[in-house]
Amino acid sequence: MKKTALITGASGGIGMDLAKIHAAKGDNLVLVARNKNRLEELKTQLVKQYGIDVYTIARDLSVPHSAKQVYDEIKKNKITVNYLINNAGIGFCGPFTEIPFENDEKTIQLNITTLTEFNKLFLKDMLAAGSGKIMNVASTAAFQSGPGMAVYYATKAYVLFLSEAIDSEVRGKGVSVTAYCPGPTETGFFTAGNATESRLVKLRRPASSMSVAESGYKAMMKGKTVAIPGIMNNLMAFSVRLTPRFIVVAITKFLQEKTQ
Image (cartoon, rainbow, N blue to C red; front, side):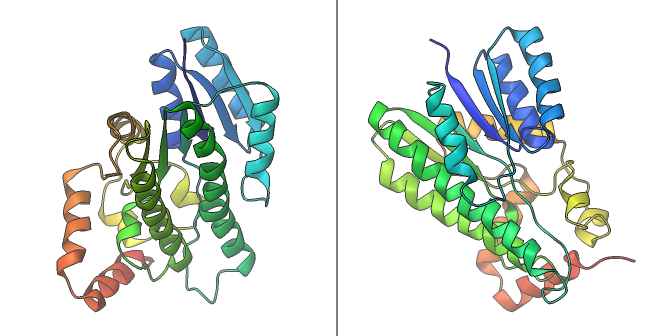
């Protein structure tokens, strides 16, 4: 029997590439994103190429209760989700006091609240079935605070710690939860977050979204608790444990500042 992967933020970047990877493996898909047209284009492509079933849900997950609405729609259509990939995320670059609070609310709602609710809803089903895998996309930002993107970094730390805790709770029950922590990646994230001119983007070449997606897929399938793709990203995550925090914060602030 074919398995089904639910992927949020599937209309582009890592989410789209994860959809392609799962489709190539023969998995059916539930794709969730705001852009209905892009979802339908991807659906047409994957159905034609791989002969799988693809169900799309156009939904803004930064809106309260959207996770429950998606879950209810999936249950109504009698779809069983075997892989849950919480990939959708957002963040805004700039001084904390200059970013509108409405943007912070959207960041917290999407990166924390919606992700948490998706985990809670689908994890219960997976535990009842005795099988399932969840991947929560965090970031290397999860390992330190981030002046210049303060709320975003804080939300990703939450994703990391939540995932580790849940994975510990469900170990031995046929279910795994992976916190996936990629570094800078070639997606539309930096453009959407007004961060294209930061030193982090200018000084470091982002990884391709497909390479990041492939690494994340392998980590989830192996049931890793925390996965960090790339040697440099692993070194960075490890180094913050040994470096005084005030130095780590100062370096992060420097990298987040715009070069112009």
